[in-house]
Length: 91
Image (cartoon, rainbow, N blue to C red; front, side, top):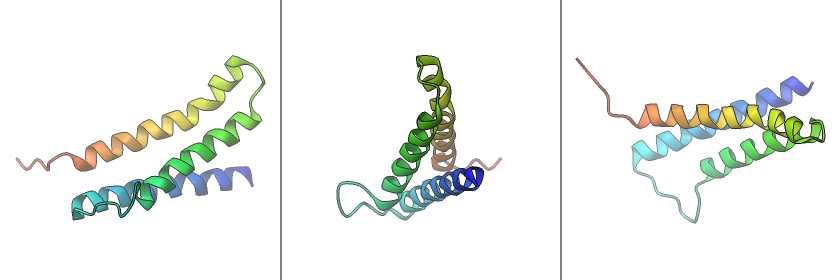
């Protein structure tokens, strides 16, 4: 069951990133301090990190190893957002 929870959190983060891209293309600005998709993305990454750290060995190496997937996921999302915000190239 743990893998299903992880997949749900990760897919929610991907959807939040796509919504951020859609908002940017539509020119939407957040009503308040932070947009809902941004809040969902941050919460998903924090939840993933917290779950991994909870299961980690109580050593610096254990924590670093446990934090790697959440960090890598955040980097992957930022790359997707970067790619989506780049101007289209038509040869």
